[in-house]
Structure formats: structure tokens, C-alpha cells
Image (tube, rainbow, N blue to C red):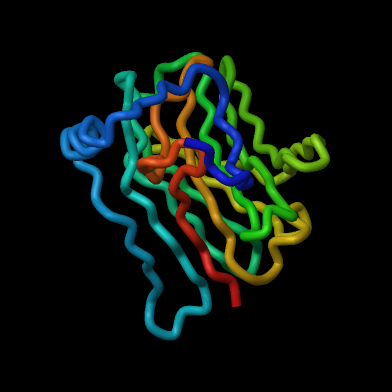
Length: 194
């Protein structure tokens, strides 16, 4: 069956297992304690946050339990909730963000290799990378970074579609949200900007 050409978010890193059987995805989600996506915001708060806790399938002792994107005055705040990453040699927390028309698309990452930490924005349409001056926060419970809006041209307004991932020692171990049934156009979460 041919699918119409649709811009799809690129794969994260190398070796992401492709699980085709939807029943297996449901079982993995149930075993890892994943829940449905739930937008959150406080009454009167100008920040908009979207949390995706539909994560999996972890193929490693390291797990990704949630990814949160928050639209705030300083930029796009991203937080990854993980476990089992503290003692690993190389960990990459990443999220791919794009506009609905795929006219702007970026991979945002926080990478720890041998104790050195780098935060970056990779423009997926121009194939250029900018290392951020902002220091990411790394804890036993995950990572967080704020990316200034100036580093994400084209995402100033409208809906931002996104997918998060955890890569450990060169292998993707989990994504958020789960890809769904159409692997050519995987499920994405959305953050609406005013």
C-alpha cells in the first residue's frame, strides 16, 4: 500500500527498534507505566506546557518516563524525566520540533559524553548546528534546558509538533509519544503558541 508523501520527523540516532505490531506497543506501554498525553497550565499563568508521558519502549535499563515542553518568556523550556542514565558514558536527551507545514524543523539536544555536557540546536532543513550558551540542568532524574526563541526561527507562533527521545551509548532506547500505527508518519505531541 502506497502512502501519500508526508513530511515525517527524522529518526533519532541509530538503531531505533521498529516495532510494527500495535499490540506489542500497548503491552510495552502498560509494562512501563505510561499514561496518555495531558496538557497542563496553571490558572492565570502565561506559560503553556505540554507533557507527554506516553513513552517507550525502553530496550535498556535506562527509561524515559516523560517529556515536557513549556512556552515561557525566556524561550522553549524542555525537560526530560528519565531513570538509569546517571552511570552511563554517553546520554543524549533530544526532541525534534517542527511547524505543521514542515517549514521549520529542529533537533534540540542535551548530550553528556565522558562528563562533558553540550546543549545544541540542529536545523534539520539547513543542516547546521548551533551550540547553546545556556547551561542545561542534568540530574539523576533527567535533563532540562531553555532554548531562546531566537535559536528557533519559524516557530514564533502557531502549533509546534514534537517528539522526544532518549539515546544511551549510541542507541535509541525510548521515544515520547509512542509512534502509533503509522511508522511513516509517527505520532507527535503539539504545543500551541499564542
